[in-house]
Structure formats: C-alpha cells, structure tokens
Image (cartoon, rainbow, N blue to C red; front, side, top):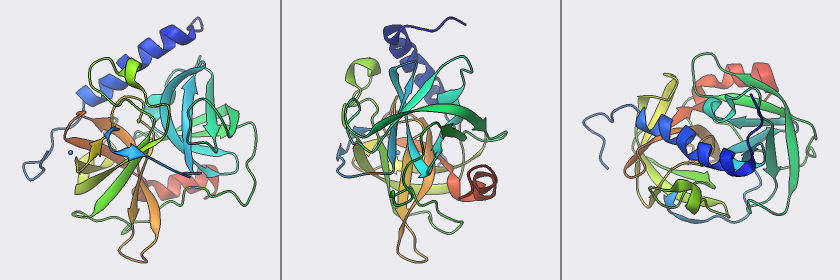
Length: 244
C-alpha cells in the first residue's frame, strides 16, 4: 500500500477511529450517560502521542524503556510508520520523537505493544500498570488523550495539548472493540473521542491507594460512555512481551 500523505492520513484517521465507536457494545441497562470536555493535563510523563505516517492518530503510554502500550486498532496498518512523542504534554513540540520498530498485538483484545528505537532512561516515570483489584465499579477513573474536543469533524478539533477528564466506572464486565474484556465508564466531566484511542485510564487502587493505569481506550459513543480494555486482566501477556 502506498504511503498516505500526512493530510490524507489525518482524514482517514477520523474514519478509522470512528469505526470502533460505532461498533461499541451497548451499555448495560444500569449504565447512565459515559476527550470531549475535561481540562488540559500538566506534567504527565507516562502519556504518549502516537502518529501514523507523520499525522496525529492515537494516544498511548510508555510502560518500559523501549515499550509503548496502545490500542490494537491504532496500529493495524502494517505498511504504516508509527512514531511516538514521549515526554511532552504538547502534540507537536518537546520531549523526544521515537519510531516503532516492532508491533505486537494481543489475539483477543484491543491491545498492542510497540517496541521503539530509542530507550528512555531508567528513572523515567513510566505508567504503573494495575493488577486485578486496582479498579472497581462505582469509583472515579481519569482518562487521558490528545483526541477530538468536538463531535462531527474530529480532524479539525484534535487537541494540541494532552487533556484529562473524569469518568465513573459502571462495570468491569464490558467488551472492547475486539471483543476483549473492558471497563465501561460513564462521563462525569468529559469523554473519549477520535484520537484518544490507545490512551490510558487511571484509577486510585482501593487496595493500596496508589494510582495505576487500568485501561486502554478502545471505544466511545462520544457523549455519555466509553469502553477501555481492562489492562489488569492482561498483565501476564504484557509481562511476557515487555517484561513489566
């Protein structure tokens, strides 16, 4: 497949990220209305902006010196070049831009790991991944990403700066875009949209009171609910690939 120009890639990005949202599972009857809204984030070293062939595409997190965690549907084109801006809350400046040299996807969920060509220092503040029990239904969880701040033409309103919003976990018994296990959350002051895919959901663990990444953005209806692949249930797979 020929490499798309940056403009064409950006236009196709909206369609690619809209498909998972349209294919999202129906919220259970107990769910109430699920980053549109929210506010700018500050100093979030674990957050990563993902580019496809140079165009803004998805969000992600850095979890180890050479490993980035994101959504499988964000890196589905094997002919594309994926780059990642690490260490900056700004989409187009700061931090370091690294290139993905290996993509490994989970067979049954919307998760992917990208190995990058430059290692980050060992003292870096990597995303701390939660174990089962790190998130429960009824608690608040925060979602992070550079995605659309509007509905409709999402390409025209991608956020240049990382945003964060609060959601409330409705159930841990939902499905992601690929049929994997997901956390369904309802909007409190914002919701995920196109470009937030692959980005993290974090929660304060009721077990030890620490913040962990518990989800990866998979689907959303752009207004009331979102489904994040439940990272806590895929820890063995992540360890087998990235060692963390």
